[in-house]
Length: 168
Image (tube, rainbow, N blue to C red; front, side, top):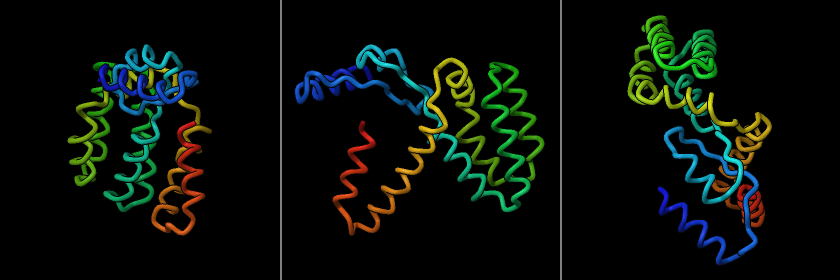
């Protein structure tokens, strides 16, 4: 990871030696943030957009009852954003899995994808500064716009503008 980040900064700075990002977003709680912070010398914010989006989408796909979907998401949000760690999180996850045991398709996914790394997510949410809700909304908006432009491919000029905006 450290080699990749260093070579990325070197490559970018060969193109523009004055380039310096103001903020760097990370969306992987297992990432060593100090490597990014050292290489780019800027703020590093934790961006929960990808993780929450995956969680929401899988709840919608794997659970049919909208009331249960709402309650599941609220329960998971309490676990993720509680600021607690260690055994308390493990107990909360166990309780969640017990309450929604009848949602077997989602629980299978949850046990496979989230349980092994839930402590990483909770610790990152607790210890790293988070990207604002406005930024998360902007990311979602541009993601949807890029997808629609990509699949439509009628206005390539606009697609280039959107892609350029996302790098600034």
